[in-house]
Length: 135
Image (cartoon, rainbow, N blue to C red):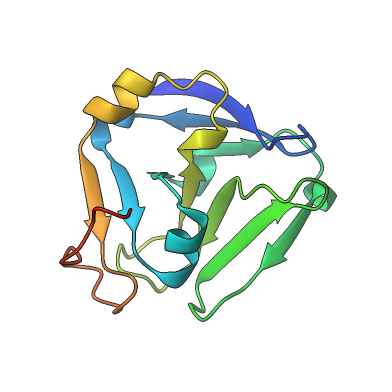
């Protein structure tokens, strides 16, 4: 069920509001960025995310993936979401929200949602990685 959630970083300098349907599933990726940060993500379209804080509260890291933007809070360093541009596997831009940054996260709802494991480490986005226990 689509619902409006609010969330933010640890120090609350970065705040957002997003329309999320957890029943559509969550994502765990094994790419070097996601696995090191241990991200648990939910995908939304860009129009489903509204930044409530000033964009200047964010710093953006760009890694090897040319379409991935990894903003994080300048003050506390928490990684709240990713912006993924085209071209990518989905064919449209999207936002990966770090579900651990959702203020009123219902853990039971998140745990009961399907989890899609993606193999970003080997750029094989259409197939799950052989090992997922660490994700």
